[in-house]
Image (cartoon, rainbow, N blue to C red; front, side, top):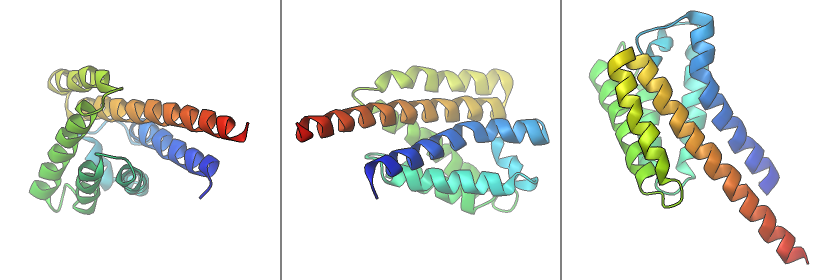
Length: 160
């Protein structure tokens, strides 16, 4: 796949992942957790977003375990497989924290990510998840844009 199309596709996935919880909120109202949108008309959006995000994360260094966790929590709905779903959801968020903390250039995303636990305690699971998802998406958006800039500069240098 050419680099421009790959960049646009990855950008699309990050934007969809970042906006999906808010689309669900606007259409269905606030639920106790993001996973509960599985029981609404937002199920296709929830599944598509998580599947596309999993696929995206598999291609990023140090993000394969979060990708597997996200795929599993999507495969095992919260209402039929309560324990499997919740354990893989917790594993997803913990492994995302670990992956972010291993980043040398973007490690400062750890602080707002950890702040999502305060939101979780004070405002509920849904808002804690939304904040954590937003930080994960901001991290990947920032990383994606920086990588794209570097690759564009390299191409310009090679062509001269």
